Image (cartoon, rainbow, N blue to C red):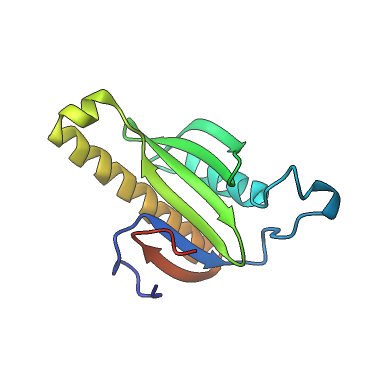
Amino acid sequence: MTSVRGKFPKHFVSFRSDRFELAIPDDEIDSLFPGADCCEWFYERLATATRCAPHQSPVMEDWGWTFAVKANGSTIRVNVWGIEEWFLGVESGFSLIGLLSPPHRKKTEADRLAVCDEIESLICTELKAEFLGWSETFPG
């Protein structure tokens, strides 16, 4: 991975920040994944961003946290993991029309990339975190 922006396809981004809690209390280790605060922070900001609207509030899964926003009508899911650093995975929601229509897939990908740009801006400007870069596959 590299810190040079835009070099890799934007699917997973990683960054370091002390703003969010990576540690889990011992009594919650079997029932809680780190990332609730990170997930909520990004959801609140993306849900009110110019190009986005709220769609699905943050939810804990058995691997981490997830939420969704609408960007220009496309559902974009953001997955959040915290290990030794933070990872966000950005994926397009699937639809039958998207599978059958190449122009729709192209629009949805453009909408996904717009959300990626918004996330990168939040990391680098508002959060002022150490931006580690984008990758095509999960870097962990």
